[in-house]
Image (cartoon, rainbow, N blue to C red; front, side, top):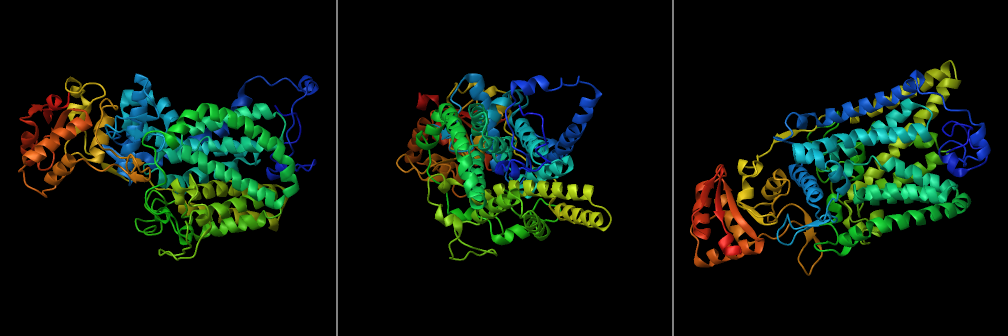
Length: 624
C-alpha cells in the first residue's frame, strides 16, 4: 500500500527517483503504522464510487464492442464458419482447446498427447501451449464445442488486452483516462493483434502483459522485494501457461527497457539493479518450481523440436511494411500488404506514414523525459529485429546483415517468428502515444489563447493519423462439417478409448476437425502441428511424413491413380492401421470420389458397413 502523497501520474520526482521519473511521478514507499493510523477511513460505498467506476465500465464496453466488431462474422455461425484468413491455424487452436477440456475432464497430461499424430503424439509445449485458457474455457468447450470457445477466446483477448493496458496506464503512468484509453485502444486494435486474430489466440492473449511490465518497474523501485517478487512470479507463471512465446517476447521487451535505461541513466540503473535482481531471483525460484516439468517437455521431452521450419527471413517484415497499411485496416485492402509480410496473420507493423511520423514527433517531443527516450530505444530495437537477418526496404531482400543476424542462431531465438518482434513495437508505441497525449492534455489545461489552439490542432492531427489503421471485420468462410457419426457420439460404439479413428482421405485438417468435434475423444493419425523431422533429428518441421496408405488414399481422392491395389499394398495398409493403433477407418458418404475410395478400402480391409453418414471398416482384426 502506498502512503498518502502526490499522485504518481502527475507529479515530478522531488527525490530524484529515476524510475519514478520514467512514470512521471514520485517513488512509492511502504506505509508505516503511523501512516495507517492517520489515514482517513475509506468512504462508504455509494453513488460516488459508482461514478468513479463509470468511466472504466464505459471503456470496457467500448473495447468489447470493438472486439465484437472484429469477430462479428464468426459469431453469425460459430459452428459452421471459420473466422479469418488462416483456417488451418484456427482448426489447430480449436483442437488445442478441445484437448484441454478432454485432459481436464479425464485427468490426462496437458503438455503431451498421442491423441493427435497417433501413435507418436504431439508435444503441446513446443506448439502453442494455452493450458490455462484451455482449462478456464473447458466448461464452455464441453457445453458448446471448441468452435464456440475459440471465438470467445479471440474476442475476449482483444477486449481484455485493451482494458489491461488502459488500467495500468490510467493508474500508474498518465493522469488522463482519455489518453490511457487511446493507448489501450492502440495496443489491442492496431494491425498487430487484429492480424493475429486470424488464427493465433495464443498471440493475442496479452491481457497479463501490462501488469507484468508494471510489476517489473515496481521491483526496480525497491521496497517489499519478497512480496513484489512473488506477485511478479505468479503473473509470470500464469503467462507461461497462456503463451510461452508472448512471455519470451515480453522478457525481451523488458530487457530492451533496461538497455534503454542503462544508456541514459547508467549510475541510477546500477543503483536499481540490486532490488530488481533480488526480486527477479524470487520470481525465478517460483517460476522454476511451477514450470520445471513443462520446460523439460518443451526442450527435451518426446516430440520436442529445435528451431522453426524454414529460413528466419521467410517470416520477417520489411522496413517498407511500417509505412504501408494492413489488409484488415480501414485504409488497407486485399493487396495493400501483399509481399510486404509473410502472410495475412503476420502483419504486425503496417502503421502507415502518418502514424510513423506521429511516433517520430512524439519521441522528439518527449526527448527530455526518460520515459520518451527509453520507449524510443525499445521501439527502434524491436522494429529492427522484426526485419530479419538482412536489410530490405522493398519486397526483395539484400545481402546486407541486419541486427537480428547477431542472435538468430542462439537457442530459443532460432524458434522465433521474426515478424513478431513488432508486437513489442506496437505495445511500446501504445504507451508512447498515451504519455504524449497526457502531456498534451496538461498543456491544454494550463495554457490559453493561441497555445491552446495549437494543442487542439496537434490532438486532431494525432487522432487523424490513428484513424486509417482502425480495424475492419475479419472475413469468414464456411467450414466442412464433421460427419454426424462423429458429432453424435456414434463413434463410441466402434472405437475404444485411446484408440484411433482413421478419417479418409487421411489428411492433416480432416483429422484435426473430426477430433475437435469429438472433444478429442479418439486418437487420429497425422494432424497439424510442429514437430521433429524424425526420432533422431529434432529439427523442426510442419506435420509428419504420411504413411504409405495415407498417400495411396490421397492419390485416389485426387484422381491421380486408379482403384487397383496389389498384395503389397494390402499388406502395407494393414500394417499402417496397426501402426496407427486404429479400431476403425471411416469414409464420409459425401467425400469427393467416394465410390473409388470405397472400392479401394473394400480391397484393403474387406467389405465396409454403412453407419449414419459414413462407411466404416472395422480393422480391429488386424490391429488387436
